[in-house]
Length: 446
Ligand SMILES: *Cc1c(COP(=O)(O)O)cnc(C)c1O
Image: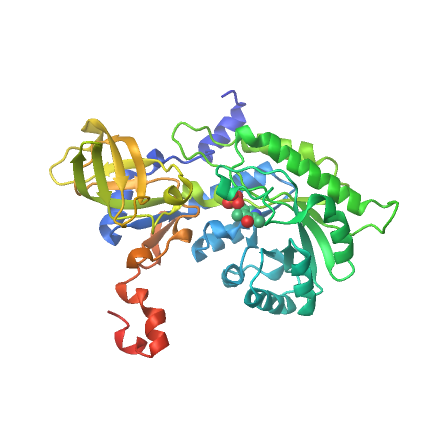
């Protein structure tokens, strides 16, 4: 890396990535001892650093945190204090963002085939918070908003016909589910302006913008810039110009999950983005990072409970599973794993041989596996493992399959650790059932 001196100093203070090896092992071991496992640890100081790097790479842009990556209240508050807006994908997310103190003028709701209940809720919020912006990607959604009396701020989601993404399931830019087809977008936006205050155009190409995919990012951005200029052209052949405020080019900023992946060169992505969007003639550029804000700020701690030699190799059984961290099972995602040791009578991990192992959870599913053929300091029963880069789409996708209570989460801030989500109990698994049949009161607290 050839960096100028001042950049190198910045990089020391706020490095472009935090690896699982960078976490303080003693601190994590103490947290696991105090709060038990599986345990999510989310470092709010690192969340703030990630926000700062984004804001300094995109100084003129509106930066909106896609809250679905991690909606924990402590995270939302940290992001709000850092100065980002909130991009929400459901009524529940809007509710959480409001509770975390985001005012309507910092709230963006992106409706994807929105359930009626969600639209009712958001239209109601918008009456109180008229600064809220609704992003819609289908004419039906516009009609449904109008039917509810909504005539407020509206952004049109466009399918730019190009997509990026680390896995087919998260490539959205060219999936017809998302957005109005590009060649119909201008017409739809002009019609929408008769019913709403159309303030922007939006596209999100999917997750995983990495150095190899910069070209498709550039193409998406260029198309969106062209569309915005067409819509705001003061001298169009056929229509009045729209009074747009911004062009939103979505999120998808990648993080290095593998230990040897380079971190995203954020300043280079920012340059490419500005370059591709061109002169926006006064319109703002907006971005919507989710993963980038929270991924490397989180680890999942899990304890090895079974070490089993098999003809196919050693299988390390742990107390976290796909219910706690779904990404490996759902996307074949790689998460780095570090053995923090701690098994009775075993040497420190640094003094052990390395062994290639599989790490698997307690769920009755073959897919409930965090890795195979992974070189770890030879694990022993009782060791604590840290699964890294787990802060995005980690707790957020946790579920109760196999009747598994969700794990606890601890937030770190200024050296202090606070439990921000208690570990669920067995009684939490049946709350809805017991409330339905009226027996909830007697059983709570089990
Ligand atoms: C999920 C999502 C994002 C954020 O994606 P990341 O890969 O987490 O950055 C941004 N915008 C929209 C509309 C999304 O659905």
